[in-house]
Length: 469
Image (cartoon, rainbow, N blue to C red; front, top):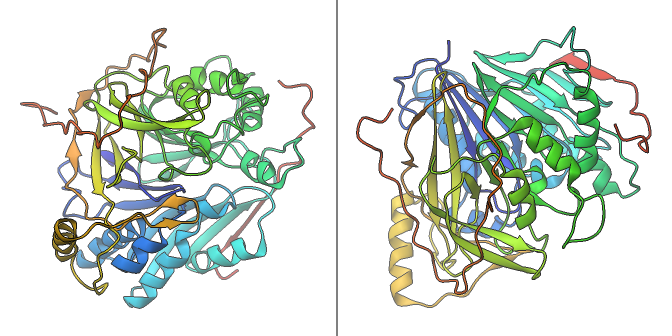
C-alpha cells in the first residue's frame, strides 16, 4: 500500500494551489524520485505575473513541471492521476493555462486520470481554461447539483481511490440564499477529505458559512462522527471573514458554522493561502483563532504568521507562533518572505516541512532559461548594488525569488488520540515593530522518525463521461 501522502500547500500569491504526492514505498526520496501518484486540488494564483516575467515561470507551475519531469526521467508517461477544481473562481484555476503552456513548450505528453469539476455557474471563460485538461483526461465528472458522500449513514458512498489514498466529497454545490454572484460561487465550492489509513487532510476550497451549515445538516443523522484524525486542513476562502460570518460585524462576528465545522473535523494543523498585503484582508485573525482551537503545539518550531485584525483594520505580524497555524506570507517588510507548507502523513506518523522564498528584489533582468542558482546569484548581487522598490500587480505585491531547501520539523508518532480544544488564547498579541522576522528553522531531532431559513438544495445531478465520449 502507499506508505506516504504529502500535501503541498503551494505559495501562489492571492490564490489556492494544492499538490498531493502519494508514494508506495516509505523509503522513496521525494526530493529525487517521482511519486507513484500525483494529484492537484485547485491550481490558481493572483499577483504572480511579475515573477513569471522575470523567471519565465511561476513557482507552483515550476513545482508541477518538476514532478512531471521526474516521472519522464523514470521512464513513465507524465500523469496527473486526479485533478479537482473546487469551483470556478479564477484564483483556483488560473495557473492551468500556464501549466498547459509549459507542457506544450517542452513537448511533453501528459495524461490526466480523472478530472473533477465542482461549483455553480461556470462562465464560458472558466470552462475554456479547464478544457485542455479535460481533453487529456481518461474520464471526468462535472457536478452541477448538490452532492455528498455522506447522505445516508447506512450506505455511505464509496470513495474515489488513488492508490491507497481515498477521496470523499463531504459536500459540494451547496445552494445559497445570497443574491451576490461571488457568494453563489464560493458557497458551491467542493469540500473534500483525503485519507490514508487513520489520518487525513481536508481541503474546503472557498466554502462559506452556508456550505458548513448544509454539511452540518447532512452529518446530523450519523450516530458517530465518521471523520478520521485530520492532521491538516486549509483555511476556507483564504481566511476570509465576510463569507464565514452570519452578520456584518468584524468585531463580534457570528462564526457559529465555522465553530461547528472546527469541532467536527478537529484539525491539528491549519494553513491559509493568501497574497502579500492583499486588499481582501485575508486571512482574518479571528478566523484562524477560531479554526485553530485544536491545533497542537510544536509540530513545527516557532515561526511567524501574518494576519488581518478586524478590530484595528490592519495586517499584523505575529512573530513567534507555537501552535500548528501557518500562513504562506511570513512578514510585512521588504524583502517579503513567503513559503510552501508541506504536510506529510504515513500510516503511523506525521510531520510538517517548509520551503522558503526570499522574495523582494524585482530587479533581476535575466533570460528565463537561466538556472535557479544563477538567478539567485544575480539577485544577491542586485541586493548589494541597488535599492529596488516594490512591484505591485493587481492587489498584491509580487516578487521573483530563489527558494530554500525543504526544512522539516520533528516526525511524530500517531497515537490514535483525538485532539482536545484549547481554552487558552490561540494567537498572541501582535508585534509592535515589524522587522524581517528570523524564522526558527527546525533541525531534525536525533533518531526522529439545520438552518430552517435555507431554501432546499437542488436535486443531485452528476454528469460523467469518458474522455472522447
